[in-house]
Image 1 (spheres, rainbow, N blue to C red):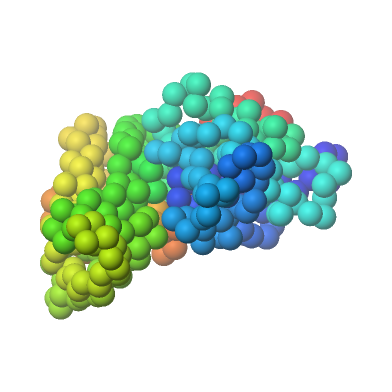
Image 2 (cartoon, rainbow, N blue to C red; image 1 turned 60 degrees about the vertical axis):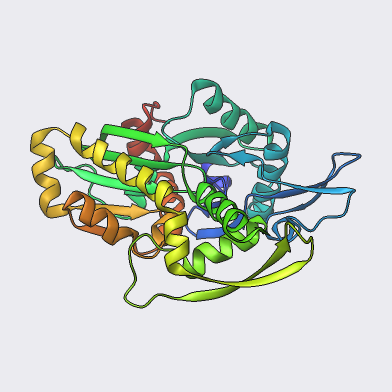
Length: 340
């Protein structure tokens, strides 16, 4: 009866963005994982897209915070406030019954971190919380046949973590997570601009550079863009032009870490499953999958076909949604939870 009355939801609680999947509706919310609070009272001023606009632009009495770091909770109270805001926004019509929530979490998090996510969701208004590992959620979300006796490999590049998983017969054969992702790429761009041009830029500008001219593999036609920031020597506003070649050099170490992660996973893969991957290749999901030429770079490094998911940003959230639809069957197989 409770299941019928409640609006069960799946949450991709990401370092950069939070996506919410409502049962029978699809993805109903997609907002940055940012909260703005009043410095003196610690009260929430804005959440999501409205708060992200304030990053780097707040007056002294307001602080814009990203409460998730490297895929896990860095600020418990702020994460709870953010979750409550998102749950209430999605669950307006059925507030008399608390929802059951499936939350996607990085595969490499500790038991303490798992407990923090569960506690945050319950205190934010969940009736019951089920944790699902992000690589598994991404594999389900992109439509991989995970229950077949064959290798399915997924690489999920999020804001705080990059995870790789090899899945067969609805179980994880091998998984590894590194705390390198979109944030690390943004930091590399910020550091490069400071080192090469004495130009100070913020997170939002670095993200814009990554999207417009960031690449992992030489482009057929190199592109450029204007960047505005503050000269760290003169202290005055300054505009420069940068090229995709420069940003590719700036990102080389971060991209190499992702390539090494994938190669290590393939080295640990059982021989029979390795044979499957020769034909099947593997999928890329997460926001990092959209970096120009990353699929080509990984394909060259591994010799395998690489496919970018149709909607890489939504893969994990869609996976939590499909688990919601098949709770009785999937939760037992994927999380070890008893059937309800």
